[in-house]
Image 1: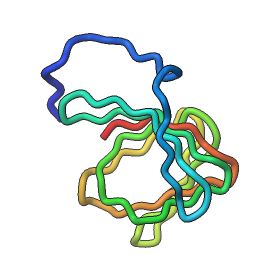
Image 2: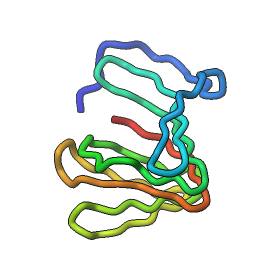
Image 3: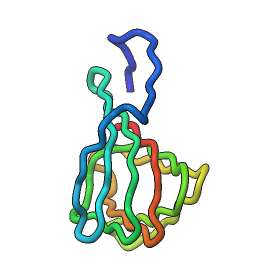
Image 4: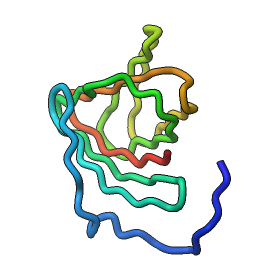
Length: 109
């Protein structure tokens, strides 16, 4: 990843209006900023959220609160708790996430 083309700035995520994305069940609320080709998001998943698709986009993801379960298309399963991350490249392993309790994430992609 090459990070270039913008100056130093801070972000107050609380003033960015969230966009709602419905899952197969539950919803995700994204607060998004874009810096050139880099998208940065604060995402909150409601309890019972299940993604409605297999994702092949690369991400760097940090779990801030709650618990996030991620299944890979090949059958592997992972659980993130606060302070844990996962990293996946574009077109590497298709993944799908869900949470029974809700989760808050910081995502760079």
